[in-house]
Length: 186
Image 1 (tube, rainbow, N blue to C red):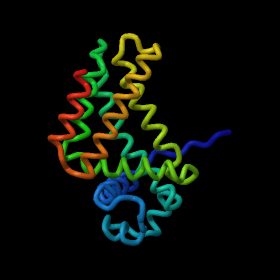
Image 2: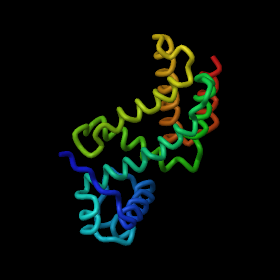
Image 3: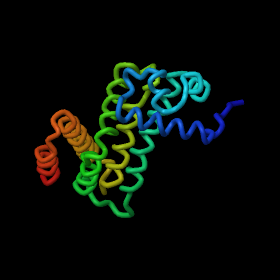
Image 4: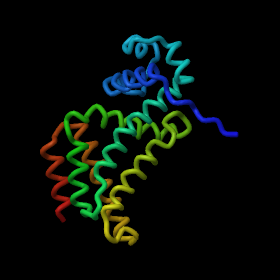
């Protein structure tokens, strides 16, 4: 009989939110439980008890970051199909907002780690986020099943992610936004 994890306690949820805020500033790659616990008003022992292991905590933090992404995707669902250019612009506006830089930096770190450590807590993070974004882009296309439509949404996703990497590396919002806009208006 499969066991399901009980709903998180209020304390677990509170510590997860504090750890998430910490990870947005400090990242996850070199996460050490002792400094994290001190920063969020806990202890390593409590974190291990609540999350099972450091890997369990990282999984919980990645799930928390992904929930922010999925909330955006839900906001961008339309009754009609607005087209890739409309969705692409809205996604870029959300991705490139200065207040999202910490989340986007965390996303890049988790995405990269997922590629090089697929068996670790990062697991299938990269693949899952690709699938999430492609699903949203597909819903914006009237001819979504065609090979041309699949290629087009893949190109838009690649454009947005490439521009995001460039923006995070350089901070040049004007240039990256012009590049995104120029490509989307073709």
